[in-house]
Image (cartoon, rainbow, N blue to C red; front, side, top):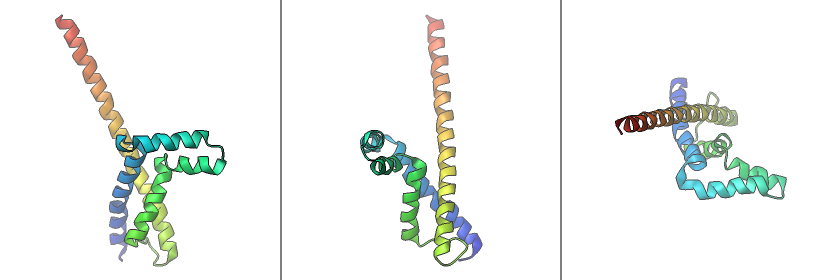
Length: 130
């Protein structure tokens, strides 16, 4: 695979990795399993068990597992055509996916801030009308 194609694959494969990682660790549809894992990561008796459950609640950590699944599914290698290509691809995909998730988090934060400001202006306008 040519380097340009590999780079395109890198930026495109990172999108579903980021999407899955974010959804599982942040969105309402997975709230109950997420809360279970958070409780176990804080309260479990054994260190290994606490660390295992923490890995399922952190989007950065979870993205490593999703990346491994995508590497197996797509047989994607970066720069080198042997096992080292998998290692390079894995860490590169995790990095790009986490850049995407950070940008998404900033965007959501900005949208929430705007909504709060709009609600404040609307409530002040209603008070002024009364």
